Image (cartoon, rainbow, N blue to C red; front, side):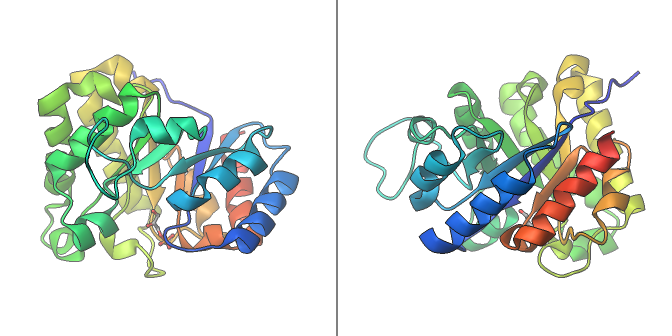
Length: 258
Ligand code: 13P
């Protein structure tokens, strides 16, 4: 019997958007309007230069913050990279790993993603691992095989126990930024597949793992998606840049988990 994690997690992925002024306005609004949530954890993942701003504005609030990438190495001559320890220095507690936009634009391999995942955990960051298939793969009916292979790179190298207290975000690539979210049925099947895969390897890790859905989540479709079994929250792109839209998604998560 799978024990469900009931508290929802809603993560804002700002991608490469924002500036000091816009960020401050959004964060102030989030703090003001999301303070009363008791069943939903809210996290903001911003570009690296704004980690200090997140720390300043969020540190005495209930909202956590994180980055959108992390180096696979500990420390050293790696120009342009930012280590897990540096993220911790700024109070970050989450990091997005393996987003498809990075895999596509920067040729991020599954092996790199696996190393980053473990590096994040080693330093006390909660990794949010993105997995998902392309439209061609879905149309060919191989989406579970694709996601399974993405997870296997981590499992084969580090074991399934690393998923305890981690987050996997199912983000079908065809749904990202397209206004074409997965249907609750499509998401339900994939989330169940992921939960079952980890359950078969390590029940404790499966029980402590949150599985988010990402890809064109909006205030309109959030409630339906968040009510689906095994959807423990969302990873939100575009709508996280609009205070009203993001807050409404967080409220949908709260409603779905109470
Ligand atoms: P959108 O919500 O803009 O589709 O982006 C989803 C995403 O990539 C979150 O990481």
